[in-house]
Length: 417
Image (cartoon, rainbow, N blue to C red; front, side, top):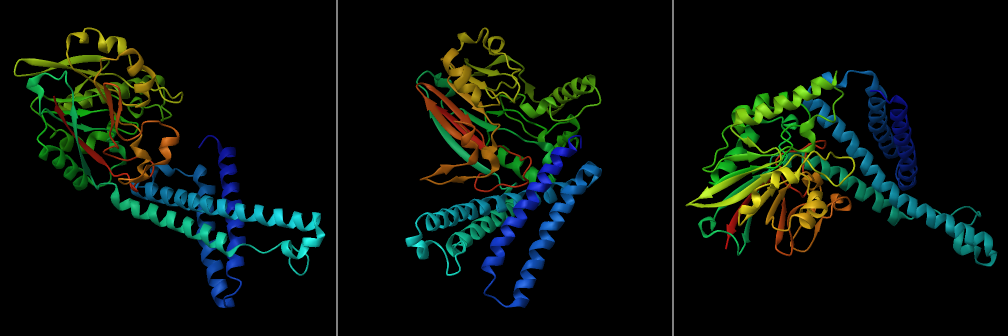
């Protein structure tokens, strides 16, 4: 861990949060028996100090050498605790702002003092409502994140029928399975992944399209899953593109050459799987004598922290001959930034990348995820004029080893005239 000073800042923030939350817990527990209070205090500080202790030693131990499951779930649990307390602190701060405001009002307008201060002239007590609201919502969030661990292989098939007047008649009923963001380095249950692949094959697609992030960082992450994903077959083939994680940008490589070799090895993985990796190029998909164009580009993002390797000019060159065009582009920000303004005849763009943040809410009445604060289009179907964008919610997972509300997705797109 190179930036240890930054890590210490995180630890200090965690302790301040713990101390602040504890003040509220003390207030809420003031009316119960001493034995119960002590039990609550011990339980709270045991959990909190263990989390802080782990974060303190983490920069000094070889954490990467720990078993992957232990690393993943331990770190996710600690982060879940942190965010649960962060949510609770928001409510506690609102209450403290209320208390301070009323105390100031009591000092400025002494005649109204009894309304703003207690009998001893001290700051008024905490609001039981806001305190319990903070504790309740924080606890619910943490419990929900723990529950979400069980959802990470709960593959959901999303069926979408898209109508296009310019679609060749031979492609009416053409079935595409769209998957994205496999992130094989996060998997810990091969049988569960196999069920996901079996579900894809049961859809009997004409073609399978994968829109990037096969691995988290390293090509070697696919070694244990080559036999599983090599089963993916379709009459017109399996086509793929690269995502931001596929370039190995999030690893401290021993040399620039090692990073290049990793990408080359990953490209070989696609070939060994029997997938046609489209690197800023297009191919023709043919059915009953008619053709449509399929383009695939390397990662291209309108967000500054993600790479722009994609070359639409190269991928599109010669594709104007096709009456109907599909583009595979990992990052959905590409659609508004370049595809729609410059390539108005691309009918359907397929993306992934966001995972729906693996956390959110989707009902017939509400579709929400924190990722929408970063991405205008983040999951599902979007339409502007004659052009459509579909964003797959991701087959795999990364970071948080779970899903809450936004389940792993297998998209079945059926084209119609």
